[in-house]
Image (cartoon, rainbow, N blue to C red):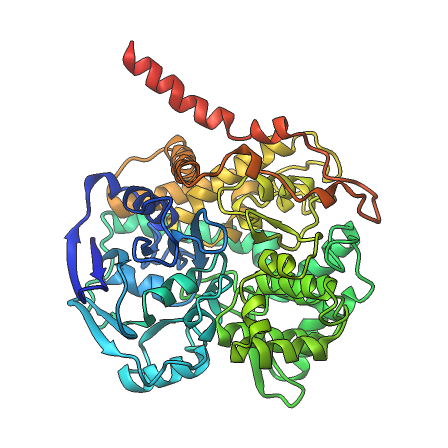
Length: 587
């Protein structure tokens, strides 16, 4: 394995030997460590001092089930914190097969480029034929030029315009730009470096070396069987996709509605996973689809319009909630069109759905106005009008521009699809994760709502801090392997699942990791990220939810009632371990 470092300022690239301290890292662990080591935490995220790191996970490129996730890291222009954003698609597997442990972009070019990445190095290609175009057109043009099997990573006009909500699109197996490193504005960072797209061509790649092939095969097959036998991983997600959660959260009173005023939406059934499933089947779409090669859960889908023509894919719960319940829009086709706009323009659907809700709060358009919403995206944001540029900077910027006080963000990042007053464990995660509000950083919905891995009452504070802490540690480790986060459902319920992950890592690399080593990796990642944030000026005061979450949330009429001290205690045990080790070393 090697690092591929690309100096955009001087248009030079070189392969480098992986430093020993990075040898056991991959995915999020590697992106966060490189950013901590090489980026000044006080730098301008859109300046030359920021770097953008693409890293496949430790298991990427192998036959490990659902192991094709790609981590993208840098300093976020949205939050000002360190950021790791995660995507499916084909890129992670291709990079891993080429032996590229991490791709590091540094500096900034004077003119726009497409970077062609092969096993032999980098070619800087003129980007004039794709500048200004949406991700769908970019992918089509570049595949026609470089080959249909080429993996494409690209930004849309939002990234070119350096909007803080801009995402990075990663093409799926059909070449569609529907898998996104969405959160934190990484698309704006790529745009600031004048890179429109990366072409990943793994032709002639050596593939991933497996030290013990038989042991790896046995562990991978066992792990795959555990995933498929689990009711969530093997049944619920493949059938209804992540949108199965719409009715589940609505029933639980935790589906944020009308810019987080209530936890129930009267129109939930019209945008539910069950309704989407029926609609897709009636129109000849695909209710089950893999987001990356080797995915066994297949929770994605292909959604056609009312004429039976392709409209969008990867149509997920968060997106449907953000543009649906949050904005009181109960028209599933309109939500699908908004998803298509985000994929094409290159925008994070969570950030933009919450932004739209804030815009409705400001009176720009009424709640429920799906035609007005489509106009804002199709005309203002797409054309970069002054209003469009405000919206493209995200929920907090938009709210402040219009004098709105009800802005659901943490560290300037929009809060996702679970009301923290009705699902209190995920509220703790929103407040404390180094990433800004991020449900995937510690997905307590498992125990709070789905009763996976035990049960912690979602309406009470008891046990929530410990739950969030343990999940944040586990998630940081999972994000480093390249495994899809949804394997956690099986890992939490099946005692033998995580040992099989460790067995795969040991067989692949010829090492002797233990479960404790995996836990320690997760803790280390969190320490690195918090260290960066502290140097960037963040402290405990930033680990808080907006004050309006002290208002009661119907139907349970609960509040987010944790004290600052309780939230601050989340990371204390992790950081005290380091202090204790340091003290012991001095004795």
